[in-house]
Length: 160
Image 1: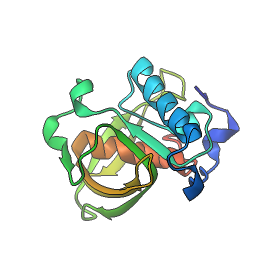
Image 2: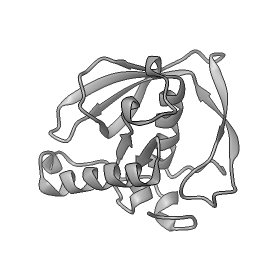
Image 3: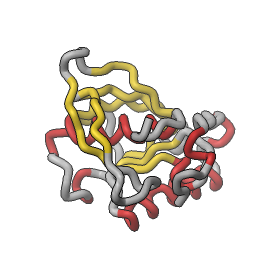
């Protein structure tokens, strides 16, 4: 895993080009995120945290993560796991519907945490490993987690 102050954590991630969809290279990158998320007991990871300069976010499926409330995840697409390639927030909760979260980050020293404001829900569009488009609305902890990982996609840490 990349750790602060690794420069990859401060650079916006590169979008995944269409010719990478369905390739072994992309499958390996996604498998690395999944394996690292499981071994680190992370709710989610962005590719930069694994040293991969690509706009890929992995979220731990709710049934595998004890901290997630099942109602926080509203599917609009059937997904066997939540690997988002080139994810974008296309809709978010109203400005006054935000939550204050105490967050920590695997790339920072374990004693560091910060209070951040996050939208209470977001709708994300993304592509799966084969390039198929999906849309998902996340609420609560899952919304918080994806916003944290999308900050990594933009080179932003909770220290900012």
